[in-house]
Image (cartoon, rainbow, N blue to C red; front, side, top):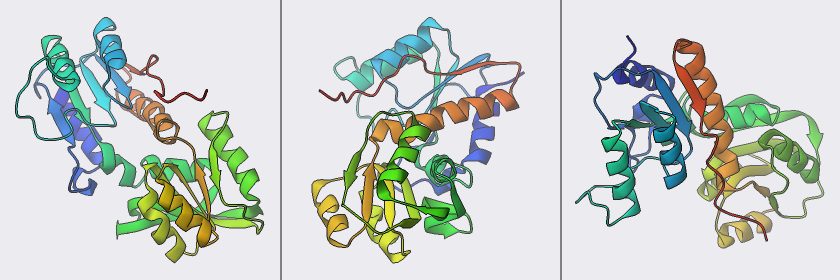
Length: 260
């Protein structure tokens, strides 16, 4: 019998919780470790849409990249969106597990998958905790690209129509850093690693100015796009390990940000 704990143990091997940032909330967040599991849904975030899907499709466990709850819980009521969603999940007896930044930094986690998807070689952590583990990734392209060519490759891999570009870099791009989500703080680390460009989900205006000033290309794919592919990859990994279970990536969740 596969239980919540069985799946949690596998996820802990894939993304050791000790890799998570100190501020993060990771691991099993809701549920009974001993309860049997037949259906698992992965998603980027627990939202009204993904919660409704999990309930309708009778999931026993949600593996969400972004944790819910994120911070300390002082009360659990329907007065807040987080409280309402947690109460709905508890009423449906759906467990919730989040690997979040542990999966970002894991050996073959989201940042590694993003780097590999862009065709980088010699992939290493941008900010390492130990060999092959740590936040962000960097590597090099077998053949140099222009910044626009790299942007086209990123759009193709992430299945998006557009992204934001900072800098008019004319020199070839060979060494590239990646950091999923909101990771503008890694611009300095990318520069120290000698990178020509960093690909991330989103960052602040002043970080964009800094990247432009130091001649580093910056590609902003959007937070959702920079991590959503990892949700689908994780569903595939779980399906391979537990072929007897019904496992899927949320078919209903969408990027809340729209271009108009």
